[in-house]
Length: 494
Image (cartoon, rainbow, N blue to C red):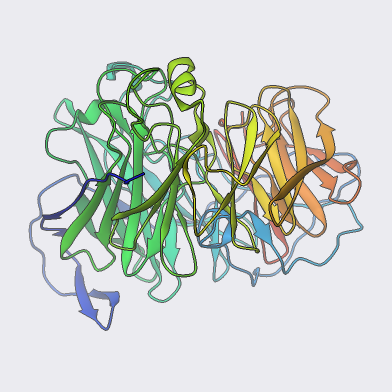
């Protein structure tokens, strides 16, 4: 099958902020304090450095409140690595219950993305379009930057988030100390999408860049998938709002990490829909190729395959390389059974695992996706949305509809079921593996569970003080910390 794609370049000028100068060279961008003022266009931002005291909830049974020094680990992208595999391989096996370390002050909005950790600071973005830097040692606010006014969800044609601001997981470049955040912004009664670059050194916005594409309906596009870094660019994925209303497409937009130069874009070649929306976002392999999965397209039985409900590999320049779709892709399209409700998982033996709302897990060859019906094998799994965790050879699949996590063991051309763990109540979201445990949040309580990777039994559980967990919430694990964000706060355990 000949793959079809749409890849193009667009030149746009970034807005550099007063008080900073962009120094670009050798692929690096640094924020340098400058003298004098100046004027800029576009959404405004404000930055402040504060250090209010943090608050701690009642200690959960079996845990104690502790103090600790600055954490040394890092988690600078969704899942902890470019493959977004939700694994901390450095955490030694845990035998004691997690001790509550801190709860942040109340934030100004819900946090849908995973917290990032770098050089002792925790970074989160809220639906009110504020980026926070928290102390990893005690949760106090080190600084915050309000980027722009968010969009009132009630003004959108459909959706289930309000307000809508920073919904995706941000990404931080350790080589430059620059943090990238994508925000939906109010623009004089309209809707815009902006990428912001913030310096973790000067603690403010360096530049921002318009992400909106000519001809699209901005209020029908939602930027939910986690950001990624690849080949000197920030990759930003788009789908539609909850409810699949109006006209939208799946997109990947590649923005130069320096802020200057052409944008690269890939549009899923559906007549309509084909969202790239999984919270685990855009996955990058060791060669710099880009992997995405799509939701339902608009083609139905008897029509040509339209790239809905597919796994797609792109080059670093966002040209389509190959594609896979289930044989029943048209039925999945018609019934809104998104294959792309999770992101592709790249396995250690050169394969790709994908599972979605159709409850079938597919194992694919990374070098030959095979087109329609081209899987190596498949396995009845569960209805899954969020992100799959991977610690070779084990995959940990969130079963969204029945509040469980299913272990799936992969091998060359093979998949088999392992254990299944079920929460006492409620839905469970995106798991993370650390310290020989699967960490997963249930919205009942809400509760953080730690499940033994060998036996599938609950080892530890603790009630959270983060507020109601947003759908698909993930768990950050780095530097001995376990971090969870919610609708009002971030909580840390050690």
